[in-house]
Amino acid sequence: MEILHEEVVPVRPGATPDYSHDNPVVRVLGMIENAVLAAARECYLFEELQYLFSIRSIQLYGPSAPDSAVLDPRAQDNKCDFQKQNVQSFTAGDTHLVRGKVSLDNWTGPFIRISYQAGPDSVLAARLGGSPGPAIRLWMKVGEVALPGLVSVPYDAESGRYAIEFWGWQGSPANLRQALDARGQAAFDRGALVPNPTLVQANGDFSREALDGDNVPSALNVAPNDALHPVRRLHIEAAWADASGNVWDSMDGANHQFEFNMILRGWENFLSVGTSRNAHGGPGALEYRNLLSNYGKFAGMGELARTLPSWSFDAFGNKGADNRTEPFMAVDYADLHIIRPNSAIGLHRHRDNQEIFMTIGDRAGLMVVGDWAKMPERERCFEVRTLRSGSLALLKGGNLHALINPSDEDFFLFTFGGYD
Image 1: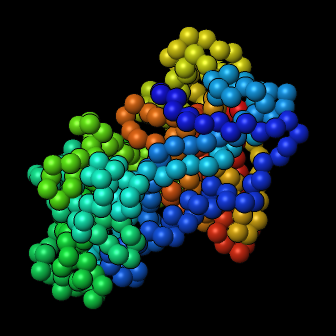
Image 2: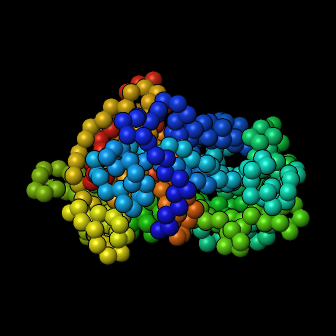
Image 3: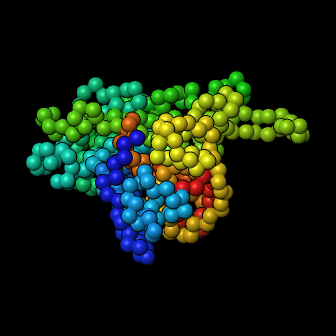
């Protein structure tokens, strides 16, 4: 894990940050609202949309007094000082991704949209010394499948970004165009909506009925390349170039590494499902859905485990050598929360401990998860998904996170985990 805090903002002893002005979680909500899609709104299943916004830099508030001068996060060891966890601001990166489901006539399938900043502040514009023009080019790999070459990505005047949307449509391109409305057809004609079922695959049945029974493997082993796999991570690799293919934003050849990796589980996102007759000696039957597990066939899976750097506390509040492991999740608290209408738990991080957010009412909220430090295998991003009733999100140590209640009703939440 590479610590990349460009700035920790000191807070004068006795002062309180202004969380009501230019709050970063409101900025994330604005990025969601400004995400433009290629076809008509009616085509998209909005509660299943997932967003990935790359992050160029993050600023955290510094600790409260008497630790106001301790600005290195590795030395901020006061577990009860929450101010040092909170995000003060962030700068978004150039690449945004959206994935989800689209529905057209009798077909429903996955799509992935990738876009790039068109303004003068992008890496590509800086290297060109000016605007890239009406189109740029993209190389992309989704899971194990890569585009055979560069594709043209047109400028989208509505969003002010270069954008292309790949659909997992398996029929003929002509039939797709015919089924689209005028907006979708215009995007199709300018190359902003492209059918590519090889790149964006949909070949798994993850329904309860398909996975029920002891002879059925874990959902992890079903259709591992499905672009909307409910429990597997989706790794995406991308590199951008100007129209000539001579000037690149490609991390100097290493390419940008993105990942949809939020650990979100619930009635539709589970490891396995089955029916237990006379469960623990009781009458009748019980249906179970394994959400997070560290035993039986899931022993050693590691989702509830963590690897600790030398500057991180273990479950007993001690520091030690690098790469210590804990195969369990430590719990120091279990709380109920009510997030009031149009309110949010702000963007913050826990340096050391894991936490679970679980909805217990009938409302849905927007869950935000991201990395506070650069991970070896991926860029820093904010990932946003809808947390539905009865669903939970597991937050790993160091994850940035927030939960937004965009509705006009109370949102009920159960949280448990270890304090930091």
